[in-house]
Length: 171
Image 1 (tube, rainbow, N blue to C red):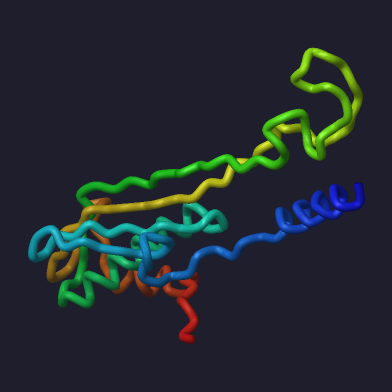
Image 2 (cartoon, rainbow, N blue to C red):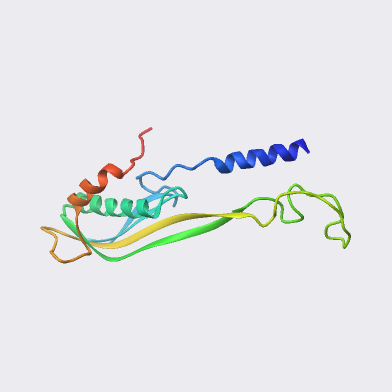
């Protein structure tokens, strides 16, 4: 009985701990962070994957920041997004036993008899959503064209978003 209470308390404590949002860094081992793939000389596919504590807006900001950084690193001034999407990936994490409840009750569950018991519901689960944003971009030199809502000035984007970008701390 004490063990069951201890396990339940530990689970509640751990579930209350919050994860910190992912930081702006290259994705390692296919995990969280940014990545890009060169498609042509001036065309890239850029993506950013966040963890469960990274909001959709943060993921999209990090994507735009990386696209701007990539544009300037390659000697260009602005980029045009040709396609863009943000995908939510939701997983469900449950607690408890797949059987009569957790901790198990007393009785004859599964054998046609009756009994009594206590426990947490076995059907509880919590959704955990992670976002992944990607965009295909074309890099250009000179001023961005007026009236094109898909064109971004790389320096301006970095200046506007820079204060909100959380960079990885060097170890």
